[in-house]
Image 1 (cartoon, one colour):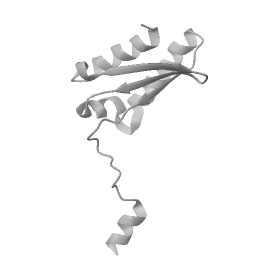
Image 2: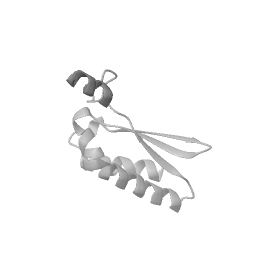
Image 3: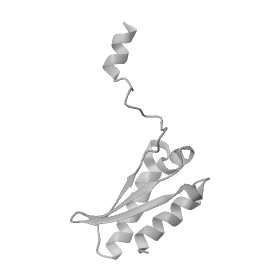
Image 4: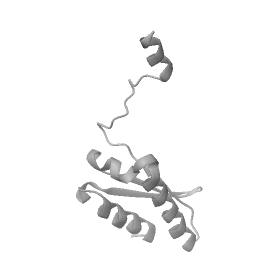
Length: 100
């Protein structure tokens, strides 16, 4: 296993309540390394954090790990099925129209 993959998996499993549901997929292309993270729906808030601060910190740390190995590392966090955001969510304009 690669160090960036191991690092992300270790940190995320320490943060969540359901470590068995954590999965990290690593792919490499011309843009660099992409780590795709999936967690349980209940643990999503613990990974994103208030205003996305935990996710930003994870991305920063992964960039540092990548720089150590001369690689560009990016993090994508998959929204689990049953997440709060859905296709049917209304835009601000639609909500304002409904109010008037």
